[in-house]
Image 1: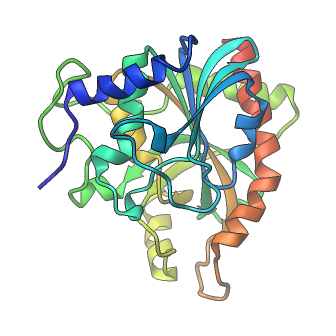
Image 2 (image 1 turned 60 degrees about the vertical axis):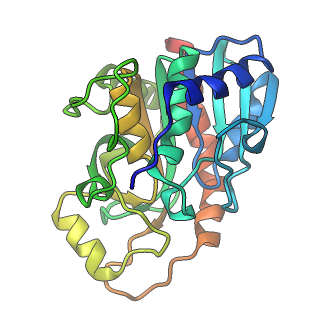
Amino acid sequence: MFAHFSLEQIDEVVSAIRAHTSYQPRLSVILGSGLNGLAESVERPDVMGFGDLPHFPVSTVAGHAGRLVIGTLEGQSVFVMQGRIHFYEGYSMAQVTLPVRVMKRLGVEILIVTNAAGGVNPAFEPGDVMLITDNLNLIGMTGQNPLIGPNLDELGPRFPDMSQAYDRALSKLTRRVAKEENMTLREGVYAGLSGPSFETPADLRFLRLAGADAVGMSTVPEVIVARHAGLRVLGLSGISNKANLDGSTITTHEEVMEAGKLITPKIEKLIRGVLRRL
């Protein structure tokens, strides 16, 4: 049985948000593990806890503040999710992606999605930032696609195209920002798994053979629902650790959080640069 939300339930969340803010954001940002800092830079913010909104799932993971921060950044009205919802927390795919559908009904046109990811590409180092050029939807391939269930025609088509999941013009703009800021910007394919266990060395070798450059436990369901609803998507992965391809090291959530301190200023610089040029 796949749970789903009706358009009326989605609009109840939208109404609750509109009751607390006069901003009309056209751009949204989802902040991944350890990347909460950008939300603190939002000017004149209206802040809401996830738990204060009807139907909205509550984040249970360390490093995810679980707040909506709506205000301005670089002169743009922005809708920032300070933390996200994960499938491994026990939520349904409909709950995980409800925030993206709320964004659509609020009038958001662009989604910038960020995450902390393990570097599968051996050239990647902790602290690097990777522009996501494509993704491997391994959760969806095994039957957990967020679009399973009744299609909401008001939001998008039954069979959305995913050939350009990550917007090419936004990616080009991000490359330009990185060059102007003299930043090294990695690029590659993000593999989305369910978690919460980290990958075995065999998992990682399989992902590398499949063409993955980074791996994490989020993002892909949100991107699918965003593209279904016609949002343009920019994806950025902060590389928090090197993939343990031979089983010689141990990966921990604390390591991921610590790497976030290095990654957040870089991702903030990129996002601010993109906002200034939109």
